[in-house]
Image (cartoon, rainbow, N blue to C red; front, side):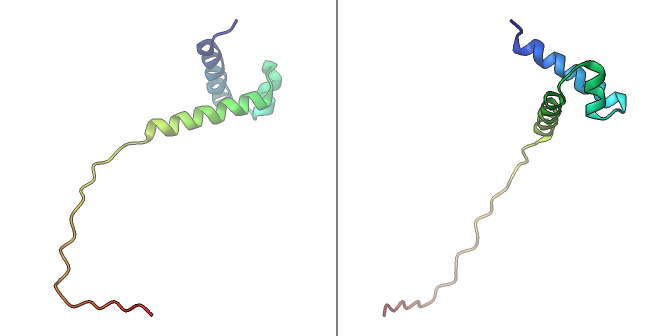
Length: 78
């Protein structure tokens, strides 16, 4: 049985080879006897992984607003 690691490595290699080939996804899949929907799935998954790798947390400074000046406030209920 194929492991997830082996499957990921297989498709990662094909995604990179497709990018380097200059072919359309369909043409690449025809040449390599792959399902084009499967390649499209792994291309999306690779792109999402790359986007997740580029996310960065930034420090945030929260400032307390100055207190409101004292004053009279009258609430009326009808």
